[in-house]
Length: 117
Figure 1 (spheres, rainbow, N blue to C red):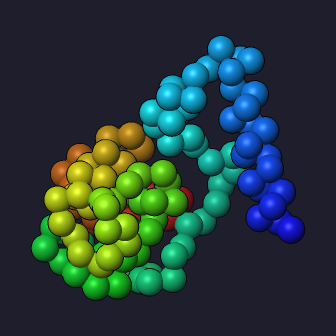
Figure 2: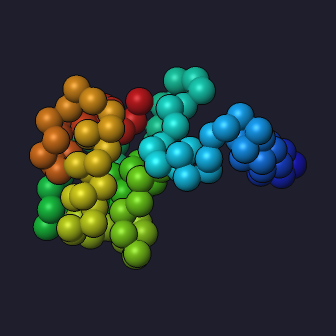
C-alpha cells in the first residue's frame, strides 16, 4: 500500500510540474535534495575504505546503490560491483553536485559520509 501511495504521489507531483512552469526535463536534470534527512544504507558495506576505479565487490555495490539512491546512474549494468568508467563518472558527478567534496572520482571518507547523508 505504501508503494502504491508513493507511486501515486510521484505521478501527481510530476503532473503538477507543468502548471508551475517547470518542465520535467528541468526537474530531471539534477537529483532533488531529500525532503528530510535520511540516513542512506544499502546493506552491502558499512565501512569507509578508499574505493576507486578497478575495485570490485560489495564495497563497490554499496557505492553504486548509494549513487542510484541519489538519482545518479552508474551505467547500463546497474549495480554490478565493478568500479569502472561509468561508476567513476557517477561519483564525479555526485561530488560536483553535492559540493564541498574533492571532485576526483574516488570514494574516500568524505564522499562515503556524503553518500550516506
